[in-house]
Image (tube, rainbow, N blue to C red; front, top):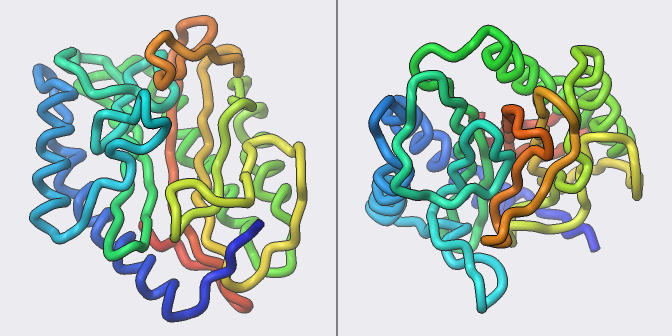
Length: 250
């Protein structure tokens, strides 16, 4: 069931998103050669706590295997849900950071992919095109249009560059919970509801340099590309109004 938000509730989600955006502005420059994922995760936990929020994804998931970090850190061939570790970032790595904040019960969600040091030309282009896919999708997210117009825009831009589009994982509703209806796939498949005022969506293209096929590692969290080629991931939380769409995590 799609949970529409009223203006007061969107105000609450907007404040959570502003906080997340402010955090990312400080966090991204810390992703450097020699820094570990655990260091980034601890910094994130401390920042969110000091700001008066809670990490939305910490301990999220099944009780027997909750996610152990405040931020998903996915490196190179890791698509999403990478667990923070002692692994240190190296020159040429592409590091995706995916995080959300729970601020008084209102949830924000965003992702960026950070180029560490000097990446290859093909990785830089993949990252740039994936970010473009995000904005291509957002351009189609307007009241009165259908949800899969977002999907078509993302898929068309990525496939036009010869990249693989991940099918098994997708964007989603957000705001009251980390994951809500509707699903927002990155290719045109599945339910196609009309977009309307009060919808709050997390749009998140996951684009691979090679095949779109992915695999789940034994930790039951980390998703990797089937061919071990790099993947990029960008995400914004948006709100749909009757006359405009707002990027809440811009």
